[in-house]
Length: 357
Figure 1 (tube, rainbow, N blue to C red):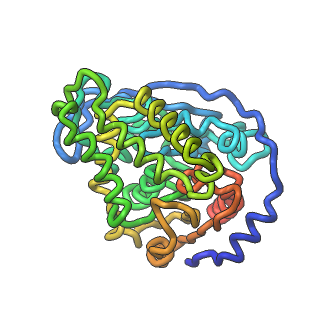
Figure 2: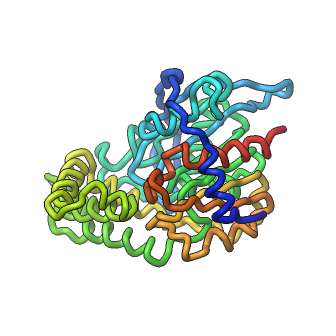
Figure 3: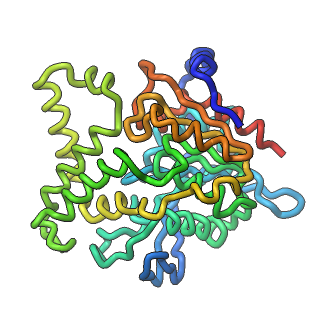
């Protein structure tokens, strides 16, 4: 159990040769309907749709155990589609790469309330059951076991909210998963500034008169404020300054971002997604995580700033845990560094070697 030193991390980043994004197999999309799904906070759905994308095929050993399944989990208000980009799939899923889709069975999931899975905007609006992170992990497990026939996971890798789900996977299903890589997250309850920016966005929607208890005719103005907050915390100041070096450029960038977000998002979906962290608190059971785990954050992450020391302190309680903090560079993207695979591929390679069996 150790935290990588800044020098170690910097050297590891420097020795990674730049690679050209590779071609990878086209993902296969599907839906699995989880029957009679009960939510921990109350309420149920007779059919919870879980949308997914898969690459590759599952492979079983002589005992019938699937040994090559990899679950990839997205962040708040994201979807599985976000991973199908050159700096993620193009760096990991191609021939000869770390998660070569000809060798691994890769499952990309749209979580409850996100993407093409069941969500408030499908029609239930504010009567949709209020889900939590543990409900989301439970739904992932049922998709894998009931829908896809996966009885073991080689690896869970998650970004942001998906990283928090990875911590929960280690606690909720310790014998099911072989390795864990949470990115851009900490194993502690949402608190401090992290809670406050979420409350700003939540309250902007919920207290907007146009929200009308979730039964709005047009998107409430509070969604614009929520979009602005998300834009603020999702990157780093250096990148934002490069993108918008003048007042006019900053206003143009911001206006374009917010208008696109409001045009493509739904206030109820965003509200539910931000509130879903209400039950996230892996602290009491952290020692029960038995799988090898490498947690990677970046020094310029405004959501999980390293100066808090939470990750470094709490990783000591994970029996096979290691923490890495990637220093600020011209390649990091603040909280969004989690989807830039070249930044953390060396640590994934180490984790896969350490968890081989």
